Length: 171
Image (cartoon, rainbow, N blue to C red; front, side):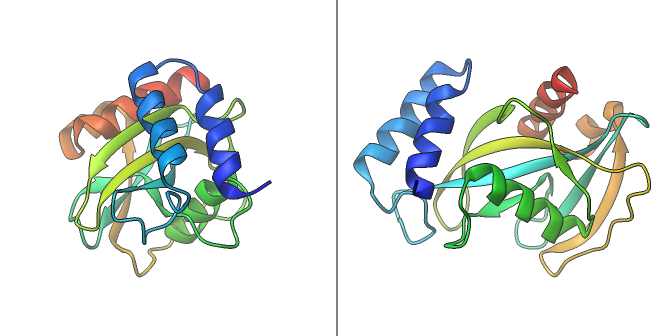
């Protein structure tokens, strides 16, 4: 199965967010290249909120280009076999944490937002960090920091706050 086909199945199976789900599916139907950064009309991206439920906190990255506190994530790559794999790869690369595990049940949210390169149709997962997790900053980040659930609204935008709430419902 291609990554494009996987994305269509994942989005079709996502519960709720009916209008966004339709936008994503229409995009994939209209754009055979809709998974890739080269698609100027926008592209599917994959992200994962790194969460430590035992300590009631999440790890956010201060994105180097956007200068915003966000979850880990980004563009799909040709070697990705699934959106889940892409989200987990991005989370590992950007957090430096080995042993992350995606929360079962597929993505927790969809979020469409404009970036300097194009529209991102982000498929958002949650990844649980192991208890002994040690993060390390990647070249894509200016900083990495753990935030308690209640602190996220003080540093991040509403899309991240909604993602934290959705992830907490699943862990």
